[in-house]
Length: 401
Image 1 (cartoon, one colour):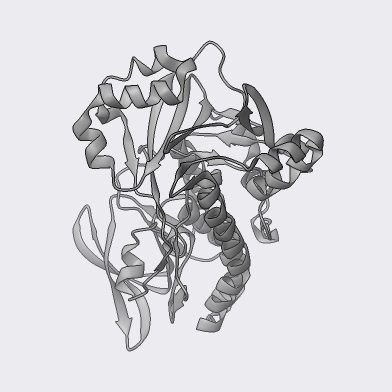
Image 2 (tube, helix red, strand yellow):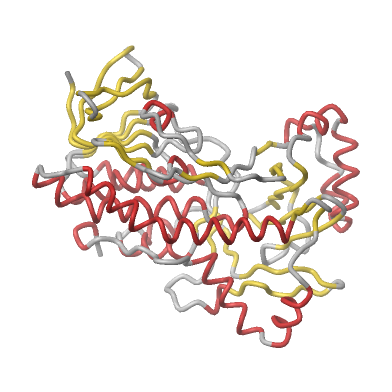
């Protein structure tokens, strides 16, 4: 039977980052990705200052800068026609004080290319985890379906980085606690307007909300409305949907009129959940597999990457010594529990502020008055969005210059 030291299931940001870091530590690691490539619409595609700094520490900054991307250095809210900055990332004391909007497949290709240079790294595409191997109560690897059929891969440690619908988590019998969420998101693109907004800009209306995200050559829109109406939106058709958008975004009517069909509008079932226990003997879940985040703030990718960094830093040495125990896996959860719960707590609060049972609202007027009077305070929400609590740095063994 095939063997590896660490089997990482899921080739998203957390999985690819963890694979790269462990490989640089000298740990034999195999990443399984069920798709044949990374070319999928990830929609958010936000890379925050904490992750940008990490790429710099890993010696990947020069290549990252060559990727097509746009830069967003603030979050603004229109108040009586005047934008008010509620988050000014340019005030952050960090090497790259902005959010980079990068197609996620480009970021994953970059991480895969860097990891492929390590002799103990293997990436197996088109290979889906179908179950877990066990010896008593210990997880000892995975069963998979790949290009050559069924197989099994033994591993000292299996890490689930396969997202909010994690097959690894389900096979291990780990069940997340779900928090109630009253809204869903729909993602689509609009043609670039002449006056492209320079910041992430929300727009609020009656029981609907949108966030405009400037991208390279187009405008990305996250449309927020009550949960459970996707079927009705699609039954009503594209003209009714365009009418909703014209009411919410009147300045973008020409671009809205060019939306051709509801096939261009992708639905996201918004979830907010977390595992109470991230591990079993021989198994660990991180990223969305451990804690599904709301799209509010766009922090999910970056929190998952931070999980991967902490995992590599805490587990590389016991893996190399052959002394890995479940208490080491518990240490990862202890390290990442505080930032995860703080961010989810803020998201739950923002859910009530931005979208409550009476419809959409927006930031409280008192908050906006304070920010207008003391603009330097916009660095606080910028820090929470861009850096977050308890940020992680690249371990010394993984740094390159």
